[in-house]
Image (cartoon, rainbow, N blue to C red; front, side, top):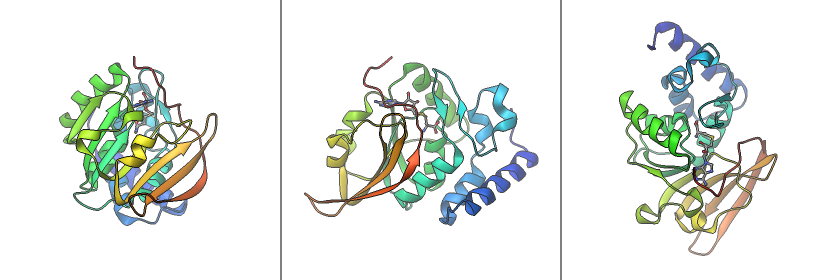
Length: 213
Ligand code: SAH
């Protein structure tokens, strides 16, 4: 599978649609217009890659809807060289969007099948995360903390304290909280002990799970 002018055209259209839906951060829109989403999808779905929809990937997981990726990324307020922790590597699409924005990305996946696949795939198309880990996102990544931003891309039943504790002062945690339907929640660390909390609408994610497999 190659990247072509046709794909580039579809991506530009997708970025325009996301702008119409309310995404304003130009760097996010540029990243969406640059990352070849069709390469992250199983071949049967390639024709749909630039629709604003979630799609199945391996291990019963999904590649998030582009709008959701853009919405979460915008909330992170990524700046070049920011240290960002992602929970739920999945296809690696969100990881690639963050790397496009010159973030240093640490990403954790708890499904070995996806972890192995994406660990090989991302560098092959030129995206090199700082670290890719097969592990439990509830724990965060203490050895590389604190982070400028933490993004959770699975529905969390509650806010893991470890993730709040691993934010820099001024750092942002973007996490969808809830069981069937999640509330997108932004925590901003304002001091050692204090966090601002903002709730930003309803989304639907695959669940963040405890057990590894
Ligand atoms: N960011 C991904 C979204 C994948 S869906 C993308 O752009 O494709 C969410 C992912 O979170 C799944 O791959 C799932 O296996 C993973 N996940 C679920 N629970 C997790 C946990 N406790 N720790 C790390 N990853 C988890």
